[in-house]
Amino acid sequence: MSNNPPTYSVVIPVYNSTRTLPELVERLTNVFNAAGLSHETIFVNDGSPNPETWPILKTLAAAYPQVRAFCLARNFGKAGAVLCGMQHARGNWIITIDDDLQHAPEDIPLLLAQQQHDVVMGSFTNRKKHTLLQRFGSRVKAYFDSRILGIPAGLKNSPFKVFRADVVRNMLAIHTSRPFIPSLMLYVTRDIVQVGVTHHAREHGKSAFTLRRRIRQFSNLIFGNSSIVLQAVAFLGISIAMLSLTYGGWLIIKHFLHGAGVPGWTSLMVVMLTLGGLTLFSIGVIGEYLIRIIEGIERRPAYFVREEV
Ligand code: UDP
Ligand code: MG
Image (cartoon, rainbow, N blue to C red; front, side, top):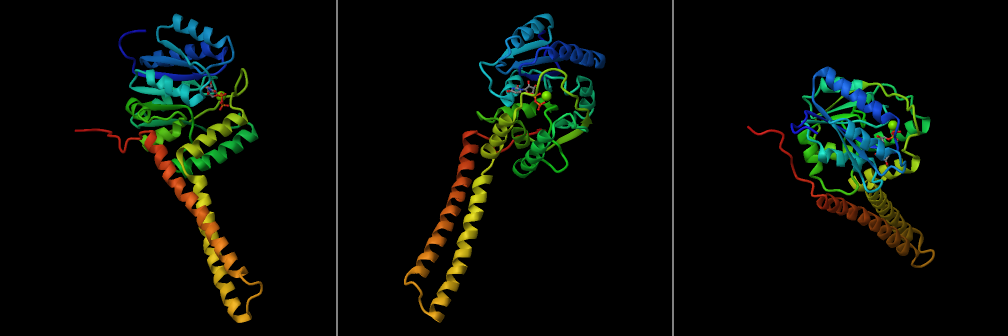
């Protein structure tokens, strides 16, 4: 590893891959050499069960001066691996790319052409390499991404990105044990643009993102970044309370016009429904406090400075 920090740091979370890794290093080296740019490649082995993965990374780190590799103690999930790589990146720009060659290193210059922005995302112009279920999942996720995180309209999130180093530094200032990269990114900046790139088919192995993993990631978004579920409960509660009050008013009028049916039934119903609704509403209010506590524990700074003159 040379002492001069490189201009670009490529961060690659690795899970179980083997065959793609040497090719990835080779192609990244070619891309940066051709452009005359210095770079480092940081692999983070995310506790891959495959016993071959880590030895291959060690060999690559020994063979190439620009390659560094970290091995996490266990499988922490992709976001944890990416954050580990970001923490150790020394470049002025940090590029995140998958380990399976589904994102082509040759597309990196397309992203770098826009590097005056805080973040450049490679959005995939073709997604047919994913199954129908995966694409449905992406749709649902995209909806909540925009609803919860406020991803600007028309922007399609993708893991293939170039970040300015200070954006990454600010993202790392947020302390969370269940990180969600787009949430951290959007908390720091909205100066995000996208560039069309091709999504390639996986040639070796299977996607590590089983339905269960995707659901877990999704639940981190829903529960870690919003009180959306309890907001829905609050809305249901206040609706029930309002309807009960209206219904109660009508029952009271009916009581005086037609006399009581079963004594006490009217008042009992009105009190029960109204209180039930208000209870649900209160749970929603508690949700609002909870999300504020979560954000407080994460020590989310109230602001980030982009520039000072
Ligand atoms: N990954 C990881 N930890 C995991 C699962 C996946 O670091 O627990 C990495 C994996 O090495 C790859 C990226 O996340 O670089 C995307 O994984 P994959 O290709 O399996 O998912 P897909 O492309 O189907 O979304
Ligand atoms: Mg993949």
